[in-house]
Image (tube, rainbow, N blue to C red; front, side, top):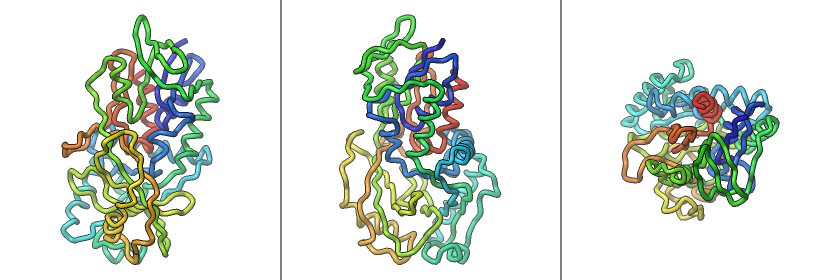
Length: 357
């Protein structure tokens, strides 16, 4: 029987566990937190991405496309709360329309079906909601939202049904190799044949324990504000992304309970652990959101939370980096830089890793 250790019980680690667990494997998932989904996953906005933004043929692009379809199927079969809301990517000014056209062309090259996309005029935007500003928009019908804790829990339950063993409050302290790997943890040693490093923000540090020093995770912080809108909007609303931007701009999302949020923004963080609140960003968020939404007042915003993205893009670089899913050294699989669209792509990532193994 093959023994496999997965380091990290976030949504991707849990997805991999339920995908690869079978009667011929002994699966152990190591997690330093007290339960599954308490790291990067716990601060996810819950958006199901359509795959508009990523370079064609990249892992982000192909796994997002495949993962989105798998995610919708999974949520339907498992009765996980989700909703195909659709998304408007809005050009606030006429000079921004060129970026919408570029986004549309990129989406088509990336495999987004043409009938999933539609350009909207100012009048058509207003017909969807009179409160959404913009001279033109690209509408993505396949975008949506999901209850992240419920989705992650369903993956965990499925993995448990297949006899995967989870070890919580269990932190990796070292990794050695001698006719197989031994994972040294705060709860003892676990010998294994295969290691899957799905440690999110700490994937580079886990790789270094195995002698792989070529990866560096750069923590990019994103804050969220809750917004009490005096009206109802059913769609996600995003500003059109400028080339080389480190994020997608402050945008409007919602959860399954009907609460609205603005964010996240994207800025370099001095730490992987700095989750302190930044209510002083309120006016910046208000001014950004006012370009998208009419009738907004600053007192409608209140600070909510923040997340930190495990990016491979250095703070001084102008281009985003793709996911890394690589076997190095042999039988040691590193998943590094698994940021957005990691949630959307999680089930496809799991299949991709299974195929590599």
